[in-house]
Image 1 (cartoon, helix red, strand yellow):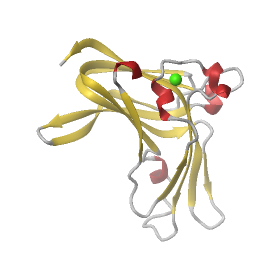
Image 2 (image 1 turned 120 degrees about the vertical axis):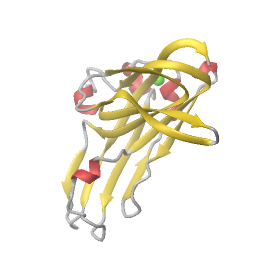
Image 3 (image 1 turned 45 degrees about the horizontal axis):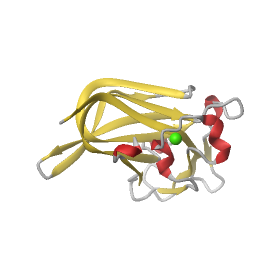
Length: 192
Ligand SMILES: [Ca+2]
């Protein structure tokens, strides 16, 4: 997608102010739109890898409720197109190879939203059937009712390697690694 003017950026998740989240990535996020879908190139630097760790501190309201820790995404990836397109399919390639199988190293829970511009306002709207839970596959195909938009957002909620523990200081901790190879969007080639 990159060659036609499409861009991608990482967006830190907006958590309640009493949460803490850290993200570390050493690979360019542009690897997700470079046209290379091969997990076999992972050790050559292909793909995007981001370490996340998320905490609910002890002084947060209802800090014992661990379900809240995974009900908010750890990362958003915004893909902006040079024009508006009618889209009905997003394909996400997560790391999946004999050495790094998706069931152990891939993303597990994710969702797709599209940008709706209404005058000067813009909102992110979930696409229909745009959520995936407990994924173990390397290729994740999301089909949805067509939308006309100039941007989509992929939200990552959880990964297959993640841990959720009751930490020694009495805080819930959720940590893991996002490993993706490529993100593709399809629909009509007509501009709107
Ligand atoms: Ca790629």
